[in-house]
Length: 195
Image 1 (spheres, rainbow, N blue to C red):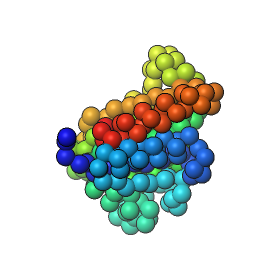
Image 2: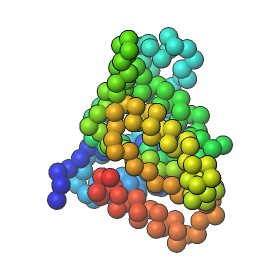
Image 3: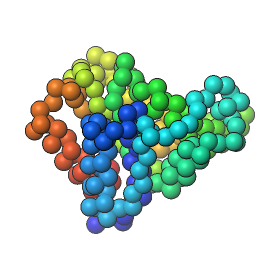
C-alpha cells in the first residue's frame, strides 16, 4: 500500500447546495479519500465570499481576501487536488474562474520575474471532473475538450502540477440512477487511490 496523501477536493459548482451532482461527486471522492486512509480538506466554491479580480493591480496585490488566503493554504498543503465542476456555455462557471484567478496569482502559483513564468506548485498532481449536458465523447471529439485542456495546460499545468488527469461525465441531466451510482462509485474508487 502506498503512503497516505494529502488531498484537497474542490467543489467548483457555484450552487453550494448538496443536491447538486457536483456536490455528490465531490463528496463521493472525499469519502473514498477517507476510506483510503488519506488526509482530506474540502472547499465549496459556491459557499465562499470573495471579490472578482478587475485589474492587474488586484492580481498582483498581496492584500488577500480571507477566502483566497485559506484556499492558498489548502493548495500549499495538498499533494493532490481534485476539481469538480459543471460545463456552462462550453467553459467552467464564471465563479469558479474568479476563484482560480484569486488563488493562482503571481507569487503564489507562478513566479513573477522578468522573462520567467515558472510554476511554483510542482510536485502536486490533479484530477479534473467535469459534468455536462452533451455526450462526453462529443465534447472530446467535436469541441476537442477545449476548455478542459485550457484548464489543464494554462492554469494547473502552468502552475507546475502534473500529472493532471480528467474525468468527463456527459449527459449528466439525463443520466439514469444506475449511471449516477456508477459515477459515484468511480469517484469513491479514485478517492481511495488518491488519483
